[in-house]
Image (cartoon, rainbow, N blue to C red):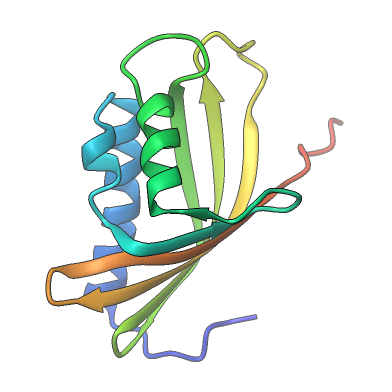
Length: 140
């Protein structure tokens, strides 16, 4: 299903760059930079988990985005399915492939995500996110 919005190419590219930059900052051990685009009213939903707010993300990503140590982010690759902007709202549908330091190399966590961004006087801010686990591709 496509988002019925205007495809402002410059704005969609800006959102994609913001998402990639946050992932890169986390992998590089810079949690403050990784969370710079997060709105203070942010909410994250994930199946069978309590809704997470801004403070929870700061706490959890502060640990996940450390420079080293087990269970810290070694890689995080977004694959964009759709990014669209309509006025002051942006939508991104994507899939993540992540790997944690200390985990077996073949252990890759795959997540689907729907992000809702809103334009503020300070720029685009991630406002809402829904994530869900994806099954590993079937081996042939």
